[in-house]
Length: 575
Image (tube, rainbow, N blue to C red; front, top):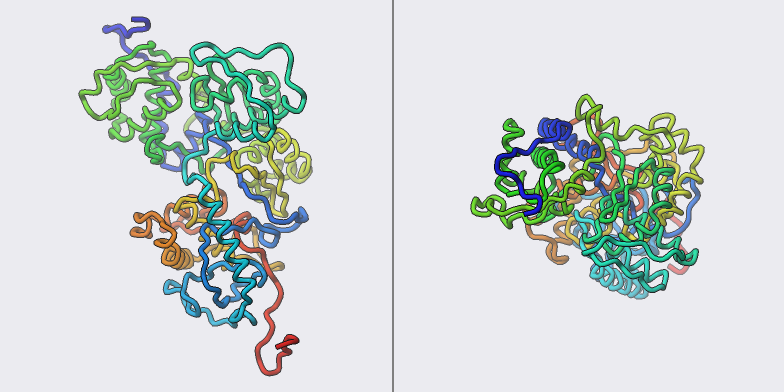
């Protein structure tokens, strides 16, 4: 058989990848995630979707500017009084948002009573307002039904390609058969507008999925990448310093690292379970053997070779299974048994794609002295390139987070820098006093969606909305940008919203039964979206800071004072 593994030949591991496997095994969970980002660069871009409801001056703060507020779940309910000033009162004409998760006239049982005056007119709101609320609620429910849950997994880029093609209103191009190497179309390029649209679709696909194959789930976009490979190669190199390699069967965009605390990680493609350090170690160990493996490799031989190459790296079956599942998802391996832990299934023979195996590592770790050094080296770039990478890959770039030279570049190129990337990738710039966010109104160029339809997305959206209302600084208040969140406030708000929205909205019963897991996963989602960040001083449980972009998801700030209700107060006319 072609490429059959000789019985008396041993697999020889790649030294650099073998050393990387040991670095993974010795790292903590967060460092292992950053090491994966730095060594493989197979992470998707992540952007906010919904733009603010009205334009705003670039010098206004996220805390005080217009918002993209949208409740995760709306239910038609009787109006009730607004029962708290909460640092700033919302516009009375805006749609009401449940304040404390309590029944009308009472504070939530998870919160202390708020001794503040009700707004005048809140008890007798007009029927027209209630009718408006009902229509908005029904429209929001319909929209939520159309959104697919994306708490963890990214949206399929085939939908992105199909939708953008429909928007351009031109017929799709013929695709090369998957059993033959795809070929470019004829010498005549499409019209200018069609070519620009195709280039943008291809660029967005590569930024969302840095490894695209001719027979994989994103094969529809592969001919576009091949057709425009020269232009894409030049633009990715000029703007982001990324290397693009396009072959007859696959395209690989070699992304750089994002530095420490990047909040990116791999997930088991079958279960969605986050990778553990041991799982990363098994992934690097398997790759170390597969880059020079024969095309046909008995599964038992691979397992024996992994144990022989690193006997000091014991792994649980689940860690090894998630590593091999990721390699199968990248099409490096084919023919894995359904249950790798069953001994009878170890007699199967795997098909190895050495070319894809060699395309997975972003670069050999030979020059690095350790995990921390590799994470630093992978993200190292001159200021302009470093800032553009953050703009293209992360939800928001805050000037306070940048080193001096990068902060100066962002200040001097505040308009032109984001505009160039927006034109390249089809994104919109949102400029605020604290920094810049590139938005994707199509809500496609991201692996995490907020708002979303899943339990976790809905809980996180409600949580961040109410945290902003509680601790948002008023104009003129001293703040360094991030605002501390009282730990008890998180528990109280989560308890209130779980009581009110859990069962009626059909939330997952496991989360309703385990509030600790709901808290952990909701905070983790907000952290990965850059809406909260851990406090610099480590505590147990971790202390959290609310970041300025979080205010995008809360109702707009209203600084109008509440009228007095005493006998000496002036009444509105008509009362």
